[in-house]
Image 1 (spheres, rainbow, N blue to C red):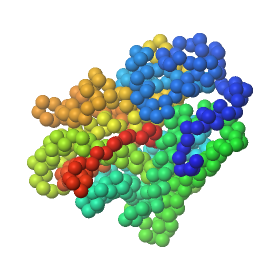
Image 2: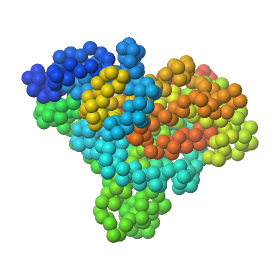
Image 3: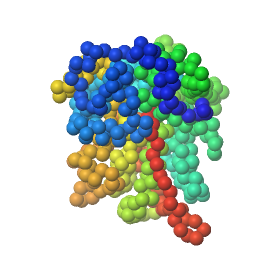
Image 4: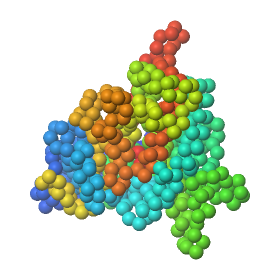
Length: 492
């Protein structure tokens, strides 16, 4: 088995250990069973819902369970540990916003945080001062009030991307990936990228893939039963130890390589303006310099990582949507032609392009980059509508279910930008903004959501103002059918 792919076979490895280890390792409390938890699938003795955990596209399964049990909040139990899934906007607002004191921390998954080493990521940190420090530093440089810092870089890379799309339209996936990765690298470190096959972008892609797969609750039994780590490493034929080492090395390279390169560039006087160069100039020489550098290093890594997957997902969804809905493409192009008169779009054009903005909102809702949010952690016992949410629960916001709520978004499976417009063709403020669910919840909502949205907006406007998205044809002019699938995973 290749170390480049995470396996869900940890469950089989675990079963090979035998029932004795299972019984001795499970943190199972018969007293807790008497509590009135939210409804959910029937639980087996000891293992609970271990064998019910979805193998992929778990957000759809959670939404189906929510309807089956007629409850916005459902409960699963795996080896004595509670998993709470929140499937409605009202429940998410109540728990993550109004009761944010209880639900602002993160569960500490041994695989991602300790074994792979991603505990420095702001999205993985427990709620506390280290998290506040890094978030504060990020917001200082990337707030919407500081758009002059990042929008010129975004514009530069999007326009370079346009030229390459015109020259090599068949490579649109690689070109957009290169542009978004280069944009993130430039903003974080000021490091120039190679024209193609850039090693830093490749590194970011591998790192993001490893996290997205490993972070799914239940993907690795070591997250449910940390005591199994040594046992899993000793099972004949198990690749667990090999995978852990590979992914830990990948994390270390991602964390250190661009940082070290930027430090050298700064020392030699060739560093380009970036988040990191600005932060290094602001270091308080009278304070704890090593600590300040650690915070800068972590936050720069967060900037590099944050935009790559979430932003790219929105852009790739644009190609899918326009391919299947040429009528939407035509309406957007008509608006762009009328407003721009043949020039390229700027960020300042956004108020005059409501239909394009509606397309972007629908992209965000239709196929959200993070269909389930990074899990929260219940730091205290709580009650929701008479149901007990036990302290220590993993609490998951099902953004996909919220963004496919038929009451808020009628005919949710259809791609309809018009749902966000009023009768005058302007953005309808009465329609719930999908950004309220697509970027996380409560205090743990992504602090850079506005940056990702601005990239998707300008990319959408630029591509539709200049290009037509249509199916490729064979040598006989017959359209080539393509099967398009979204992959399961979790973006941190």
